[in-house]
Each structure stands twice: as structure tokens, then as C-alpha cells.
Image (tube, rainbow, N blue to C red; front, side, top):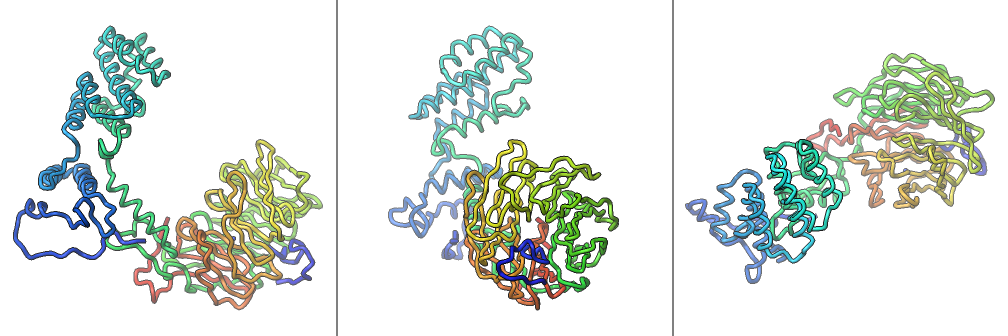
Amino acid sequence: MGVLEDNEPPLKRVKGTLEESKSFLGPPSNTEPVSCSLGDLMARPLTSQGDGETIGSRGVIKRTEFIKIIIRALYSLGYDKSAALLEEESGTTLHSSVVNLFKQQVMDGKWDDSIATLHLIGLSDERIVKSASFLILEQKFLDLLKMENVSAALHTLRSEIVPLQINISRVHELAANVISPFQCLTLEPSGHNAEVANSRSKILENLQKLLPADVMIPERRLEHLVERALDVQRDACMFHNTLDSDLSLYSDHQCGRNQIPSQTLKILQTHRDEVWFLQFSHNGKYLASSSKDCSTIIWEVKENGQVALKHSLSGHQKTVLTVSWSPDDSQLLTCGQDKVIRRWDANVGQLLHVYEKSAVGVISCGWFPDGRGIFAGMTDGSICLWDLDGRELECWKGQRIRRISDMAITNDGKRIISVCRETAILLLDREARFDKLIEEEDMITSFSLSKDNKYLLVNLINQEIHLWSIEGDPKVVSKYKGHKRTRFIIRSCFGGFEQAFIASGSEDSQVYIWHRYSGELLLALPGHSGAVNCVSWNPANPHMLASASDDRTIRIWGLDHQNHKHNHHVSI
């Protein structure tokens, strides 16, 4: 890799040359070898603390609430007999007799009776009573219209619904149906499905959302609590890099370092000079690499994880700086130091078009989200947009732009992101022609955009990587340190399951991996014999990482087979 004096701007170098819980179960309870019925077993008191009103080692779980949630889960799962037996044996009923009567009246369509019972439940919030009454009376109104009893429907609207003085816009919609009663077939109650057969169940679901949880236990409450618990365990797992389907309720979740790609699975040695850039396709089935040898290689990632050469693309007269996959991965852009962009058919390796602008070189390039055009950062500081046939659609140069290096465009195509000067990144809104700046204190060498378009990973000349949130007012939310960068462009990337990790190359020949949210350095992977210029994490396989180096090789990293007994390809 070319080396220049420290006072030379990175972009002018030959390389460019500077191219981001706790256990639920506790100990098992003591069991006795007894012979008894299910009812006998269920009649036994739960292990409790203090006066028996709470259970669990911390005494924070209310016994009655715990039992009710289990009963609710049993009913939801269809185990009605077991649920009823638990109610009987525990002496704890899921709902009061008044609430049970209210539910039955709703299901039977006894609207007047259900309104009367609603007032017997003892709700203190009058707003809830009115909202629940509105839902019930709305259905009563629609039922009357469907029976063509217009006068009774009109009476319900005027004498019962309107006096509630809520949801006025909906009242107007209902009134319109009195004029055209046949429209009521298409005007179902707010938020309900059109199927008349289960409309009462839908009303009951809506009422349940309105009523306090201690009055009517929410559906699937137990499932929600367990999912939240798994989320907490997963988020607390520093090395979590597996699918959610791998989580188990039988034990607390904790991944080990063996879930992070740390073993060299294959060394690709086809390039004849330093490898400066590489990028996996969106579907993870291909890897493209570019080199100082003026070539680009497309590699195929087999289903068994093996990586093999698919096409070698030649035509550039100088170093190929970057590559960019089309949204559907059928085409590839290559951006060369020879001031041209080449577009290739990735399936057959055929050159489709060459883009260039007289007397102006290109530094970076990318695709419109719809794949119908490309954009490029030019050496004169302009941003140019072309259609696929090479017609220039737009060329824009703002007052703030002094130079262009790395570029990206958001998935909706509305914002172009570009390094616009040594210490600033421009966030340009194409439609509003409004821009924001990310200002750093040190020189920016490269950046990458997260999959959700909410974060930028910014590499700096001071050997730091900053994670910026670009929603609203941009701000730094995390910093990563430890890698080495003194002379060359070193690129980093997001990666792993839900992009929970940050990987970067380094001039000390190692690949560095941090936890994205804590900023903790997890691994430094040796193996290369030259500076590691670029890394790319397979977006379809969280257990595959690729690195490109000055030693002319590409390393494919995977799981440590010796420490990972269940090694297999994982797709997300």
C-alpha cells in the first residue's frame, strides 16, 4: 500500500489513501414420591415468602396475580378444564362474577344488560366507562341497522351514543348510515375485522384493552412477560449472535465467544496485489473484492459455507477503489482510480456500461434504492446522478462541499450522505434541498451506514471509530478504540445478528470486533501479514466475516469448530 507524509490529505494518496440476566427458575423445588391425583397436586400451596402473599426468592411476585396469569394462559391455550381446575384448587378466580357476567352478556349480544353490568364493575375512571359504553352501543346501533330497525337505531344514536360526548367523528359516520343503512355492512366498528361471525369477540378484545388489567387480565400476558424476560437476557448477552429461535426457556441464555466468527475458514489468494475493498451482496450469496492489481473478483458463497471464484472482472487501468452491489444483487459497480465507473452483470461477468465525466474523476459510487440509476462522488466535490444508460440526471455541488469521498443513500432515496470535507459529513435531503452536518474534530477517513439507516459508523484518523445517531439532531452514541491506523484508509462495518457488533481492519494486521452497544473490545483476530484495509460481515450469515489485506489475501472467518459443537449455517 502506498504511504505518504503525515501532512498529506488521505484522499490524495495512491490508495485514495485513507479510505465503524438473571435466572427465572432458581433452584428446583423439592419433590416427594407420592401418588395422588392432579387435583391433590394442584391443591398444594406454592412456595412462598413471609406471609404467603408473595412467591419467589425476592418476594416481589404477588401470589394471586401469578396464579391468575397462569389461569389466563391455560384458557388462551385451550386448556379450559385445567384452567377451571386451577381456579377451583387455588381458590383464585380469573375474573369476578360481575366481570364474567359482563363478558357473557357481550358475547350474547345483550347490549343493554352489558351496559348496566359495566356500571356494576366499579370502575373509578369515568372516561373508561364512557369509552367502553361507546363500543357496546356502537355495535348495538349497527345490529339494529342490519335488522332494518332504523327508528330503534336512530333512538340509540340520539339518546345513548350522542350523550356520551366522545368520538364525535365516529358519531358522524354512524349518523350517515341512518341515511344509507345498507352502508353499515361495510362500516364495521373501529378496529374490528369485517367478519360478522366474530364481531362480538372483537368487541370483547377491544373492551379488554380499555379496562384495567386487574379487572380483566390481558390476553397472552404470560407470553408477553416471558418474551420480555428473553429480550432482557438476550440484550445482556455480550456475545449474542444467534437466531431468537435458538433461545430456550429451560435455562438462562448466555452465548460464548464461540458465537463470533474468529477462525480462518479459507484464505483467498487470487489477487496479485493489495486488496483494498470488499463487500458481501445483500443476499449473502456473493462477495466482491477490489484490488490495486486493477481487478475486481466476484466470489460465490456456497450453501456449505465454502467460497469459490465466480468471475474475475478486468478493464480498469488503475486501482479499483470500491465496489457496490445493486439492490437485487444482479449487477455490480466498480469505481476506479482511472476516473471511470463500470457496471457489470454479476451473473455472467459481462461489462454493461462505463460512466465518466470529462476532466473529472470519481471517488465513490452507489445505487439508487430502486436500482434504476447510480450516483457518484466526483473529484471536483460534486455529486452526480445518472440513469443506467449514462444520461446525467442531476449534478449538485453545494457551498459546503469541498471534496467528496465516501457516499451512501438511504433506502427511501431521500437522503444522500457524503464526506464533504476533512472533518465533516453532509446529510443532504434531496427533496427539501436541506442539509445537516456531522462535525468531527479529527479527519474522517471513511464511514458506513447501518441497515436501518439510523446510524453512521465513522472512522477517524485519530484511531477511533465513532457511532453517530443521525435521527433528529446527529449525536455520537458510542466510540470504539484499540485498532491501529496511522497512514492508510481502514474501513469498518456493522455486522452479526441485528448488527450488534462492529468490526474493523487495522494496520497491525488484525481484525478487531467490538460489542456495538457497550463499546467493549471483544476480539482481535490475528492471521494476516499486512494491514487489514476492509472488512465485511455477511448480512445473511452472522457467523461469516471477510477481511481484505495488503498481504494480497482475503480471509473468510467463521465459528471456532473446536469450541462450537453445533456449528451450522444460520440465515437471518
